[in-house]
Length: 92
Image 1 (tube, one colour):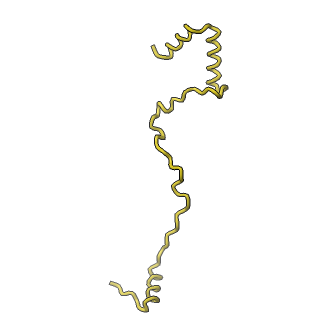
Image 2: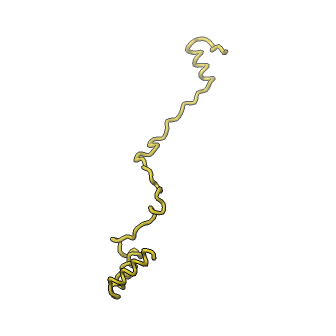
Image 3: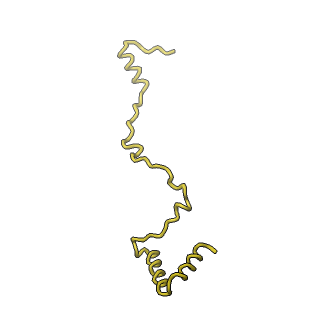
């Protein structure tokens, strides 16, 4: 016998018919979300125990956009070298 069947038998032994009808009405109100103070047990954690089982960083990974990288033009670098050193760069 499962635990729900045992619970139903226990209710029948301890309560009168009118009290059982009142219990059923209250349970149906809870299931229809008409009683916001009482929520049914959420079994999602039992079915999926490792779901989101990790901490989340409070700071976003990129608070600012990354700085743009400088692209170098080899012709400009050669011209700059010639201006600074007054000679051409010798190749190998």
